[in-house]
Each structure stands twice: as structure tokens, then as C-alpha cells.
Length: 433
Image (cartoon, rainbow, N blue to C red; front, side):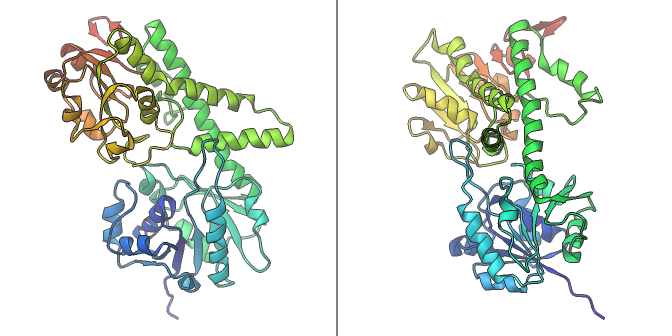
């Protein structure tokens, strides 16, 4: 008897669904990629990716014979397994808009065969999946592991799969189990729907706790003359914390996903009379740290020279993504509407900041500036030479929260250097820090 390869469907070709579909194809599966937007499907068929991710374009082209893009929902009937995976937008309060997911899930369940499991991959609040169960349909919730800038990597090599089921004791459908194990045979963690839905929020809360701790202590370093980059390696060697702990200080929480989960925790705590004061404190700390760039700019330059020329490198909330959701750079720029500002980002167009000059390159942005802020740690910014910057700039203030440039090289070029987790005037024995 000849075994045929299963056809795996993905509904929703935004960031989550598209990267997951391409990763599935790279793992050797045949993929049907559905989206209701015919124009988006046509662009994808031409090889035009709507999102930026390392390796996405290359792997989509490599596996184009394994991926069929379509705007026809009836094509889902051919699939042996259907993922529903649109991105979930959030508003300024961190509240999710589940409308597009509901619409796509209705389409998937209407067109998928009765024997084909339907898996919700988009992040949803606890209680969502159980409420969407229908008789005769296997509905599963799978926790997504997407990280902007590492989406393909995470989809190809998952640490584990967290799987929400109506009955966690029942065996997984064969086609679903085979698909999961085809991604490097990671651990499978079946549990009830509500546990899986809350697991994703739990992971992000632990991440927020680590980030907030690093931010709090890094700020103390700035005031005390300590250097967080010297402290973090000691923490990584503590088995209770670990080598992979997220200990790099940052400019608050950004991107939207972590804020959404904290908002969900606060709402659930309010609904059920539990205490979530620590989550509220994390949000307060995030807002404080997000203002670090502007506070530093004001204290180092603007208080003495209000008409200073300001250059800002980076608009995306992090490198390797086009997203500016809750971007610390955009937050800083909102305070500079009446200033003389130039901006540059390798991906995000400068016209998102209408009052700023949209520079053609990083060096063009820095030209004649009194102060340069590097607010997104893009790889190309790390190749900038401080002595070259000193040649094109008229001022000598460098605000580099993520340490894209070498501090000794910057100070040798005459810059006063500001970064997260260290005083601007810190000195080590034998030379500058």
C-alpha cells in the first residue's frame, strides 16, 4: 500500500501563519496556505513576502513547489490538518481583537473535512478554545512560539509543543502528532485547553519578570558606577537563573505581545478577585524605562542646547522586523516634534515620523548632528566606526542603549557615551569601560 504525504493547511498569511507555513514546507511537508485577501495571495505567489524575517524569502523560494497559496476557502477540504493562524492585533490597552480570528476559524471549520483536526495557533485568552468547540470536530489549541526576528528559527526548531485539548488523556490525532514530530521531535506537552492558553501568558510573565529585574538593576548601575554587562555573566552561571536567561536591559516592553499578556492578567485578576499588583508594577517600570532615551537626551544635550540637531538610527521596535508597535524609538521621537531631527531605519520608512528628515543612510542621518541615538540594534549599525561618525557629526554625544558600538572606540573618538546599565563616566582600572 502506498502512503501519501499529508497536506497541511494554514489559514491566515500574516506573520504567524506565513512563517509557520514556510517552516512546515522546509521540514518536508506539503502546505496549502490560505488567506482571504486575494491581493496578498497573488503577491505571495509571486514570491513577495509581506513581512521581514531572516531566511523567510530564501526558504519560501526554496520550497515553492511544496507550498500552494490560495484565496479559495474550499481548497481547505483537501487538507488533512488545518491550522488557523492569523496575527492578533491589540489596541493601546493591550486588548486583543479576536474578530478576524473568529471569522477565519468559522471558515476553516466550515470547509475542513470532519476527520481533519483544526488547530488554533493564534494566541487567545483562557476560555476561548473550549467556547469554540462544536460536536464532531477535533479542535486543538497550540501555543505559538513566534519571536519577531527569529520566527523561522523558532518554527523550525521548537523547544517544545504545548497542546490544549478537550481531553488531554486521549492520544493525539496521528496526522497531527506526525507533523509535530517532524519538526525535530520536540517534547509534546498535552494539557487542558485553559492550561495551554494560560501557559503562553505564564511564559511571557516570567520573561517580563526577568526583563524588569534587569532594567531595574541596570538603572541602579547607571547611578552607582557599576556596569551591568559585568554582572549579567555572574547571573547566567547561577543554576537557579541559567545561561539563557533574558538579562539584557532594554527600553521597557515593546512589540505588543508582552503588554497584551499583562493586560490579560490584570483583567482576569480583576474579574476573579485575585491579586496581580506585581503585573501592574511591571507595566509601570516599563513606562519608566521607555523614557530612558529622552531623559538621557535631555540631560546630556537639550537642557543646554534646545535647538540641537538630533539623529536617530532605528525606528522598528527591535532588529529584523518592520514592526513599530510600542517602539521605544517612536516613543522618544514623539517628544521631539519641535526639534531638528533626522531618522534612518533599514526597513521602516522615515515618513512614519512626519516632522523628521528621512535620511538616505546611517551616515547621512548622522551628518552635522549634535547627538546620535541608536535606538534599534540593527546589524548594520554595529558596523559603524566611531571615528567615521566623529568626522561627519558636529557634536560628540552618542546615546547607544544596546551597546551597538564599542565604548572604548567611541570614547577614543571623543564621544561622551551613554548606554543602559552603566554610568556615562564609568572608568575601569587601566582605561575606559
